[in-house]
Image (cartoon, rainbow, N blue to C red; front, side, top):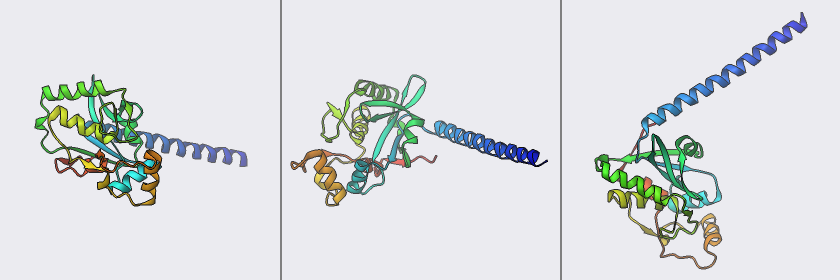
Length: 213
């Protein structure tokens, strides 16, 4: 009798755990499907992460966001085009799963995304895929970093400057975390006059609106 009760209890626990796992999977799956149905081509997705470089970017730009990518249609799928190593297309689910904090924004006036301009948008992305990531944040097409990539795509495909370009010296650089990051990247020769744009600058763009997920 005691053995039977133990087996019954074990079966009950197993069933409860299995139900929880399956329910969670279904819930997350439904959430993913909802997000996939809401997001459109051209949407800009901002992420926050916990790396040392991300922390420095967040402090210097006074923004919670340290990475950004843009949604582009490739064939029948929506992908996120991002500047990592190398510049590449990433699945929407994989991209969003990397962020502790996710923000999606869209042009307030997305009528500018005509068929011809959107084709140029996709063509530029295809041409830039495979470029090396620019960890020194230079304003050059030979290598690119995340917010530079998104800014240039919108500027060259749609003629839209999402935010004003800045100099490195415009950011808050005095925090020890930021100073240490600058030293790792540039050594003693910090290019304070270098043209840059941060994910937080794009997130604060007056041309964008929040997409509710």
